[in-house]
Length: 167
Image 1 (tube, rainbow, N blue to C red):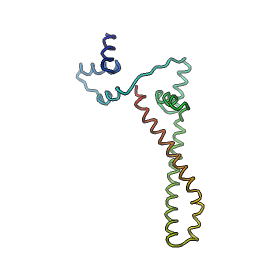
Image 2 (image 1 turned 180 degrees about the horizontal axis):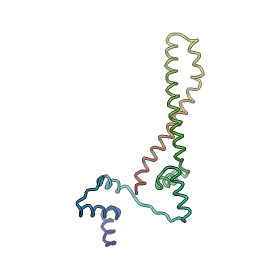
Image 3 (image 1 turned 135 degrees about the horizontal axis):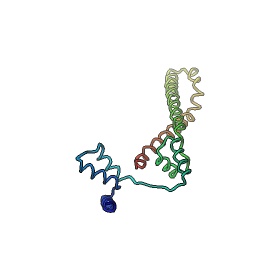
Image 4 (image 1 turned 30 degrees about the vertical axis):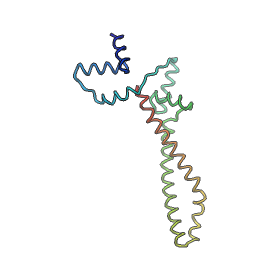
């Protein structure tokens, strides 16, 4: 039976496990929740196996767990970037930094709006109090954009890799 199942699965372009689930659900009349979604995802997924020494496999799994990622996503991250993926703690710190930066940017927006109002009123002396804010404006905005791009890039990478890791 194995060779017949493998041949039929190859002909359909799906893994044997998907074919078996389909056949079982047809025989029992059961409809799996999300079967349509599973079929759509199956067409884009693949299975990869690696042979590692036992200690290397344990270490790799441990590192993936420390990073708060599924093993597949962790390995893909290593392969795509060549860098060690950031840990869950580092991502949490990056999100916290972005949250602080959002608050600072909001305060900066209020300062600029107040400065604009002062200049419209001709209150130049009062407006000069905002000089330091204006001098650091470029650096503040660039720092905020850098923090936002780090968090968004990581989120985008994780979402893009979810399809690959559902094997």
